[in-house]
Length: 337
Image (cartoon, rainbow, N blue to C red; front, side):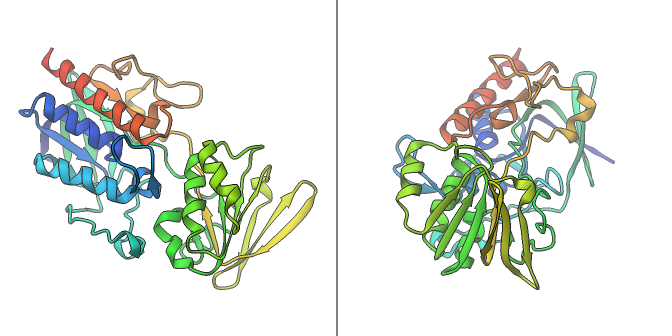
């Protein structure tokens, strides 16, 4: 297996990884930079409307990612369109992106390769995919947090038959129907607000005491006539049922079992960091599994940096962009030293 070489490999090409690439290029345009991942599979691309970006009053997440991709491509940086793993990286089919966005996903030579492992030999990292090996002098990990699958009874049976893990991707397909969305925080709040535009009734099932989202989102949710929020739902009691497609959902509310007649279930739960492909590196992590970093985004492994939610940053796009940009600058300092 012949090895390709690069100065910097960025594994994970959402808003964080793309920003790191732009920063590294602007600091030193002579560096050879490779990006791994599918930008349109990132959490930012699936967030629906973004309203907190400085200088941009409102933009759809996938449109925002498109603009960053265009910028990165204008710099002639190389996308290695590999999937990080079969579970955590799944290309969003173009036909399932909502029609009102008018989004055209560019051709980026997407392959079926997967990054199988990352190891280190002396002063270089070895990134192994299914078809090639790439040597890198440094790496930025910006893979974000994967979606949590296989947690709800009936989920696997009805995937693509009424069960979806992306409200923004598939919400428009349930126009005029009743749906359920499961999760917590800003991510699920945005999803519910997006669904309310298309669906007749949206029930939000939250496993915690509070939804844990920004007050501005909570105000919109409580004001929406077609959204109902249910807190303290024990996810172990939730069961999706139907014949060929989803027909309903059962769950326990306090001591009483409830049953909803719905056509769609959107599961928007986030998992803990997945560092399985970096297992050979013995990266230092927190008790919750996030990557430990210094103030310059460096890890306990020389030449290895991390940025974004994988190191515990808040899932706010401006923060993720800034952290990616900082990591890009810091890794260039490392390479030049």
